[in-house]
Length: 173
Image (cartoon, rainbow, N blue to C red):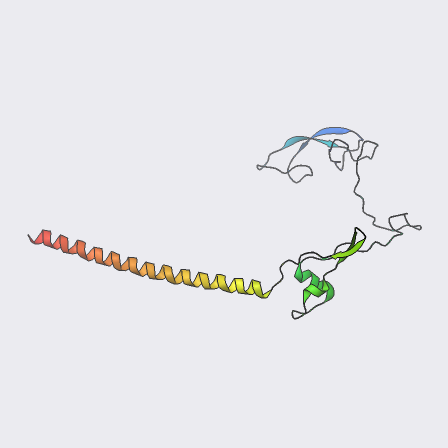
């Protein structure tokens, strides 16, 4: 309704009611198991208090609805993700996706311009190079930690030997 309370299926009123709602219900997501809460919801009967209705046309009648089913509106925006552009135009991996982006025309100050979305998940040479650098960096880090681990292990062995020698000297005297 106009205050923002959702309509609740099964409440045969055109007014607001307070219901005890549990899990697996609309208008509520439980925190703990078995938890219930009293919520204000609106009945499912449409009245003048309703501010918006979401409706889906499931079946066409004999005559078209003016402005809804008689007009075929084109898609204003195309896909933005590279794989979805490939899927829409049935492209191969070798085809350049940038040539197939759906552009829209904009008239600003009497000039016509086209705008296109930034393609996401587009594999470019720069991105491949960046990935290669990251992999090389990981390899160098692994090698560095391996050498540091080996040095630390040698230091421990050396300290253990020194401690054993001291122990022997004390027991020998």
